[in-house]
Image 1 (cartoon, rainbow, N blue to C red):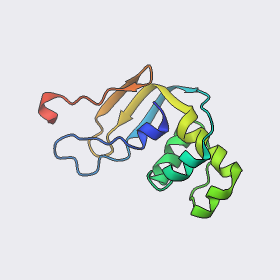
Image 2 (cartoon, rainbow, N blue to C red):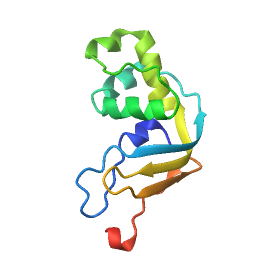
Image 3 (cartoon, rainbow, N blue to C red):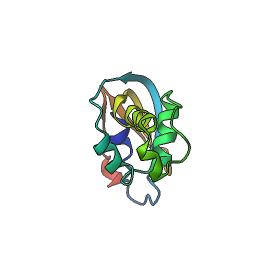
Image 4 (cartoon, rainbow, N blue to C red):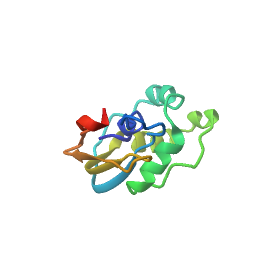
Amino acid sequence: MRLLTHNMLSSNIKGVTNGFPLRIEVEKVVEKSVDFNPDFLKNMLAKIEYKALVEASRIMGYAELPDHAEPSMLESDDFLRKFHHALMELHLEEGTLVCPQTGRKFPVNKGVPNMLLHEDEV
């Protein structure tokens, strides 16, 4: 699961008002090479929750992103490459995603998060 995907997921358990960001518990991280596309990255910066991306990337062992991103940083090739690596190339292969409000764990197996809810959670 890419951190791009992680940044779009939240816990939809009945009664949860603060289901984002899901906390990551890592068992296995893999890096997969993806073509660098600066235009895509420039568009995505406004659409993601940057602070959640920074925290998730650090949990996964990548601490190269600055704490805050300014639009002017999109002109820096160095920043774009670090942003690209965190967003697109870091994959949570095995682990869990944890609801910040309830502590409910959602497994991630072979890079696929299982966000299915139990009957009593719907």
